[in-house]
Length: 196
Image 1 (cartoon, helix red, strand yellow):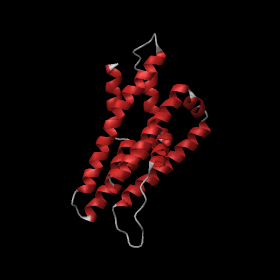
Image 2 (tube, one colour; image 1 turned 135 degrees about the horizontal axis):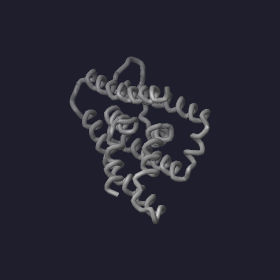
Image 3 (cartoon, rainbow, N blue to C red; image 1 turned 180 degrees about the vertical axis):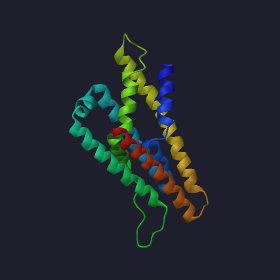
Image 4 (cartoon, rainbow, N blue to C red; image 1 turned 90 degrees about the vertical axis):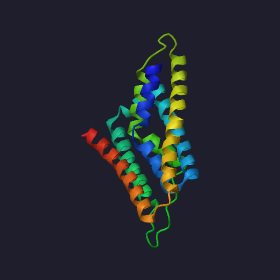
């Protein structure tokens, strides 16, 4: 069980679309918008975990056409989200500040996030610790995963909000947002490269 908890911590804290976008939303839009976004990510990651545990994800992802469609949607949405974060702190003339992604945006990110499926598959197919009671093991894994997931995401949100609250120039704030968006895009491009 401790090995599972360590794996959850290490896999969730590493930069991926979820935590990077959480920091970006916190930096670009503040604590309230970031909290709504984290709520959506939380619901989304648990939906993905349920899909993995039930076998639905394996069934759906067995079709290469569906995998390609999900990959294209994932790439498009992550790019869109990165651009919204990149331009959230800039003051471009005649362009109104973008609306922050809310609960729906968080759910959508997790549902199309390839890392979410890979991580949840690793969590629920590996690290067995109750071979005689799989149902209890799955329930405990959900509990442990969420007990670690929530504070890590709120830590990333806090980091983004602290950047938002710093008294820095609009230009510096914009540069930070662009940097976070670039990191998200780097994750997206690494995912593209892994598919080649």
